[in-house]
Image 1 (cartoon, rainbow, N blue to C red):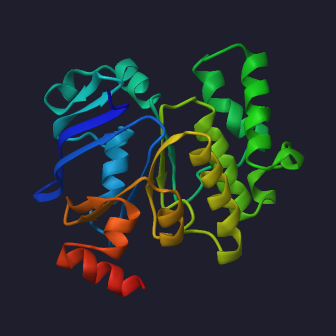
Image 2 (spheres, one colour; image 1 turned 30 degrees about the vertical axis):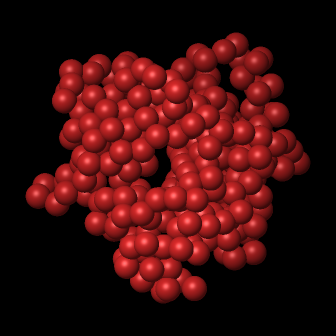
Length: 249
């Protein structure tokens, strides 16, 4: 049974159809990389999976259970929507840390507000996650005292603190200086190695080749091509895929 299954996902903004009947399934521990030009629907897909946007049609299932049905979405309560979001952790392009909280405060805030565990266990897990992303010595620092790469690693620890089934990364390195990208990608590689199920929207093609189990090329709101990294990069079938890869090589 697939951990994540998406069927017939559609999303429009006004008359503009951004997602057109998206289907995908993801096994536990798999890494799916989503590539394509800006405006292809990649970010909207992640936002629909994390319920920052609500798909107009389609279903999202986790562990074989339908957690979202576009036709019934208007009937969902706020509590039901919050419960759905707990299945996914989303790391944005721009960190979105709370400037008034320390590193430890940022990582403990959401699980504390949601009372996911005792305060002692929440803090212990947060400290372990901060160590995992290599920031033990910056535990008490504030976002303004951190580099962009360090802030993004805090954002990853914060997303992990909710113990999500699937981690979503939306161009997590695009706002970073080149020398800081390596550290963030290193954390993401470690997560993949440890068996974290992940969907990664990225332009870091070396990372995709090395880490992804499957690759989607999206364009115009549809999945134009999918396969292993070798299949998509070395033997693309679609002319649109070939043109995109030719522009980035």
